[in-house]
Amino acid sequence: MLGWIIALIVVVVLGIAGSIGWSKLSKEHQEARSLPLNAVDFNELNDGTYHGAYAGGMYKWRANECQVTVDNGKVTGIQLTGSVDPGAENTGHQTLYDRVIQAQSLQVDTISGATLTSKAYLQAVENALLQAQA
Image 1: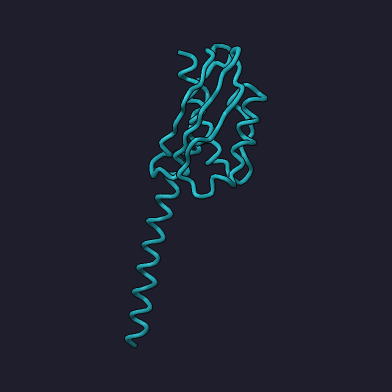
Image 2: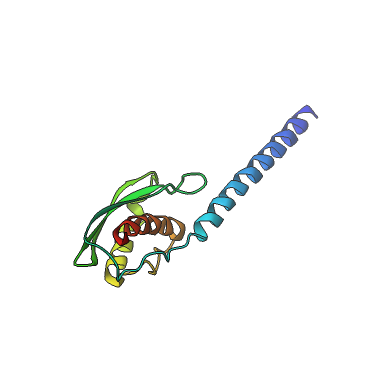
C-alpha cells in the first residue's frame, strides 16, 4: 500500500514539473515565432562591418552574435561569432546566411527543423544591419 502511495506522489510531482516545463517552452516558442524581421531597408545600407546580437528571448536559449559585412551597399558576408545553442554547428546557419546574401533580404526560407533558431539568427543579422542604415 505504501508503495502505491509513493508511486502516486512521484507521478503527480512529475506531472506538475512537466506542466511547468511545457509552459516555459511554449512561451519561448511563441516569442521566437513572433519575432518581426522587417526593419531593414536593404537599399539603404552603408559600407562597413557591423556586429549584431540577439539576447535569445525570454530564457536566452537562442542567444547568438554575428558579424555582417556590407560592401558597395550590399551584404557580402555574415559570420556567426557566438551562440549559446549547443547544437549551433548543426543548425545550418551558414546556409541561412547565404540565403540572406543571395536575396539581399531577411525574408528568406528558414532552415527546416530549426525554424525558431533560424529566426533568432536572422534577428541578430537584422540588429547588425540596423546599424548599417544609420
